[in-house]
Every structure is written in C-alpha cells, then in structure tokens.
Amino acid sequence: MVHIRECMRKWLPFVLMAAALGVSPAQDVASPDAAELDLDLVKLKKGPKGRQREAMRKALLLVNLKQKETWLAESTGEDALHLKAEISFRRYLAAVDMAGCPEEFKRAFRNYAKLLNSFEEKDLKSVRDFPSVPLQEAGRELFRVLLNYRLEPEHLLEEMKALVDEEVEGKEELSPEQMMDIVREVREALQSGKRPFPAERVLEDRE
Image (cartoon, rainbow, N blue to C red):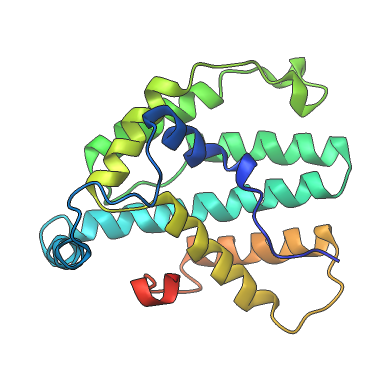
C-alpha cells in the first residue's frame, strides 16, 4: 500500500533553493507582523500582479504533480521505471507552460530547468548517472521570485498533497503504479482544461 506522504529530502525544485538562500520556505520575510503580511497578500492578489501570481501557482502545482509521479516510480523499486520517470520530469520542466507568468519567473525557471536538463539520455543507465550541476545560483534567483510573489514552496507542496489525498480518499491498497496513473490523470486533466484548478487554500486550511 502506498502511504500519501512527501519525501522532503527529495523535494528537488524547492528545498535546494531554500538551502541556497539559508531561508526557511515558510519564513516571513516581508514583515514580522502576521496580520500585516496577510493584508499585503490580499493586496498582492487583487493588484496587477495577482493574475501573474495565480499563473505561477498553477504552473508549479503541475510541476509538483509531475514530480510526485517520479517519487512514486522510485517507490516501486524498479530502477528502469525510476530512471524513465526522472528523465520525463526533467524534460517536463523544460517545457512547462508559463503563459501569464511574469518575465522574471520565466527567466529564472528556464535557467533552473536548463541546468537539470544538461544530460544525454544515452549516457544514463540509472538515476545515479545524472551529471552533477551547479544549482545554487539558479536556485537563489527562482526562490527570490517566489518570495516576492508570496508563493511559499512548502504551501505549494501542501496544495498538491491535498489534491492527491482527495483523489484517493476511500481507495485502499493502491500500488505505486496505480497511484502514478491517478496522479498523471489529475495532472493531465488540469493541464488540458478538462478539470478546473483548485482555488488557493487559505491560511487556516494550511495549518
């Protein structure tokens, strides 16, 4: 049975960014006053950057779902399936639809994805064969953009987890392969427009 949990040590796109900055993803960086922060977020959502922020949130929700497929592939214990999923994930990063996102986010995300795609598939026999790449600088740039738009990686991951939890509720003894199919179907339905994106969870729902 697959337990719905997230392997934080493998949170590739975002934990590396947080580590590079020396900042907790949930850390309040704009103000020590939580009430002021909430008000700032409301203003941001209603202002001209609100639509850009929402476009970023949707793009990153899809990225997290795609990476969830990779984690599930690893949990099968099948090296070939894990490698295939990891390659697919990295290629997906290079092709993410960022329509509506601000240019600074597009630039930072593309730089990050480019580094993760600096490999030749013919050279890979397992995930251990991916070349080491210097992610720190690109990670800093992308993480700063997320913080500027009040998008906290920790909460983005929680939104993905809640979406998957709702999808598998009441279903028992799911294999990793079955879970992969479910997550893939959810992601593809969101991406194609057949399923609406969930509204952003409010602070109370995150706690």
